[in-house]
Length: 137
Image (tube, rainbow, N blue to C red):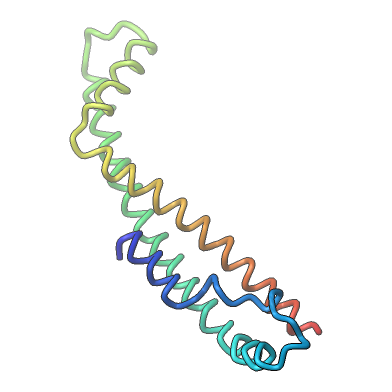
């Protein structure tokens, strides 16, 4: 699932829209909504956890792709006898990675997925905190 689809899915399932902290206990219709929202918390928590799990699997796959490319570049640099010292090898390695045709798309996706995991983890923490505060009362 692409990042935009995941974001749309999160919005579609109203995972950011219903927070009990925003509900006024004196408003009857909101109290009914709160009761429904309380029942939805476990489902929403599970859905977010599944999303995070899927993203983490993608992240591992992307990291493996990036590691393979970096290993390939490191071999080329190690076999280049014209390089005199570590500084030249580092510059050559950076140059080869920048020029590699298959490095930047996985790197971009890797960063995007990491950011999405961070966003979802924050959302999950917020929802779990709210549920915890509600069940303690």
